[in-house]
Length: 218
Length: 267
Image (cartoon, rainbow over all chains, first blue to last red; front, top):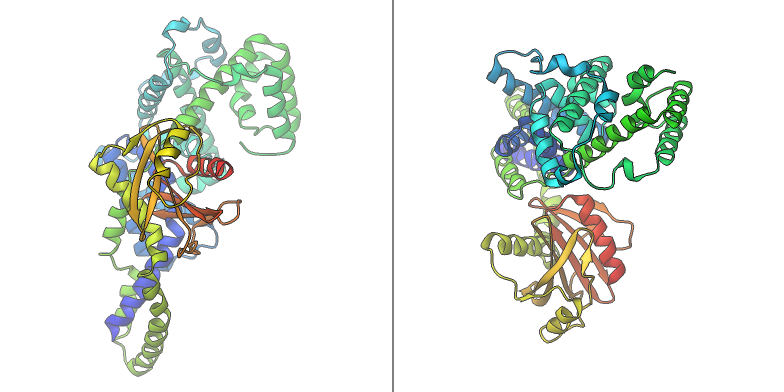
């Protein structure tokens, strides 16, 4: 009798778990892939996340989709940290190899001579350069950058997932952005296509000004 | 505000995270200072592309089935705890409750089990299995053609319903040909598109005897369009003028929804 009840309960839990969590698979995989820098390791991380989440599913109270997403991401981030701690034996943020470059003047970098248009890298090479650039970030900076760019999460959600103060999120993000900008420019990986340069500068600026006045986050 | 100040605030300005007064000051400076505007645009350009690149990461189709298979072997902690508690002295009350739960469970599960055998349930999985088999086996298309009219004429001789003319290009996907399938007890026209190395299949079949599944993970705005996630694929189903359309792909959902909307308009 106990087995039958347990079986029914398990089946019921399983159905609810799938219904609530399956929709977050693409987001979790996307982030896991960037965090681990490897397809197979990314898959393993997502797999472990779902198994851990399922084991704890009946013990948590999730009142919204956002809460469920944040919960899954927290589990994944903890699993990710466990992994790199095991690998590096150091939970602290590893200093970025080119940390001393991080204060380079953004404006000077931007107005320095652009590479010849013929050597501008195409979209594919930009994508490859992004892979390398992200991989050079330290694990904690990579985590914040991934959640910000790949998932579009606001600072406070990232802070909740990464279990750190918002100020830390902002400083890590700023560091990561500077490093990515510098890396992508140094390697000539200027994107081709429709970016801001194609828009009129005043239109671009107006867009930002308007967003600010309406108090919207990115 | 100086160029140095603007540089300090550049990322906050990009994120619209500045207060109104500082934001206006940065904006005014950027409108009047060409080097700062160039820097702003270059930074924004790289970040836009970065965002786009990082969001393009399709889930491997084998991942969700693998997770599902492993979940079958895992017992949630709460259920383990409940099972252990049941050995305590209030066994009789628990046994009575268990009988009630069991009766209720059987009553609830019966329609579910019956439904799982029906045509309706197979509608969700069969097209996905068909596309997956096609991709894995690397079979050729029955008819390779990027010409919508030519494809329609080819299908016209094979199926018992008027095949629609579908667009040559839908979003980033291009028409590459067609396949004739037979499942759900009927002949089905499979319009094959290709995007970023992924196949997208639109199955068109007579609606007769099939029901629009009700257990969708979400619905599109268009009437009757339901979205399902099956074995790592996204499956969008809708019906129009007596035909049932089933769009299957493992591309990111946003792209699939945009394609479905375009196809709905075309069909």
